[in-house]
Image (tube, rainbow, N blue to C red; front, side, top):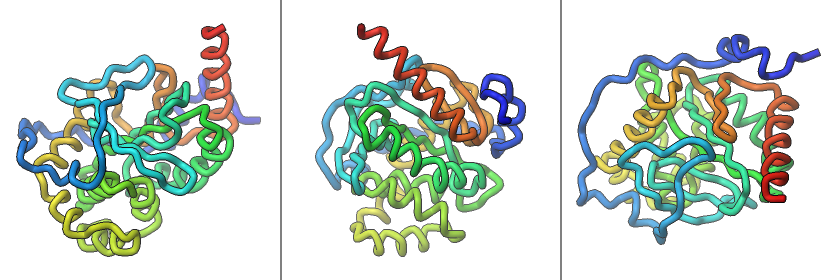
Length: 249
């Protein structure tokens, strides 16, 4: 029998990829670099997860497009949000494209979350990227996901990057062609100071939340790390939804 999540945090740590200490970089966004906002309409929305504040310098914006049956929004932090914007509960994940446990979450657990919660509008998921220094293409892949989200295909690129071993810029542009993205806009975005600043914002945010391994999750302000068993994750979500319903009376 699998033990409850609350009693196996140490085991979760073993089912995660360790993050190196992030190097200090105080570079800021170039206000003239508008590649991320050139693809679709931008409007203001809250960008905080329940119980956690978005880090300073993260504007509350979104881009609303549709990926399959799910709505997709690019938040002002560079975080990609999928699911109904009005969903009462948010699951935040910090992830990375080379991490085997992160890939397993996306290929095995995410489809079940989609069926059980996202498609029903009871849960939305925020995807934040954290590069791993030991993988040369880690930052390129993260930027590829963010810049693809600027054209409404962040989730699709996210999935492609997990299942393909090549995650460099040339590969990303090739995948973008398959997704029918504007590769000129994407290339400009990948090299823009704005996109790099958004990724650094996510790294700073993760650091402020004490995230040291991927995948790491936040649900209703509670943090848990490593690849969870799906029944345990589902139970956490159902309990949080029950609490929300009770609070609303």
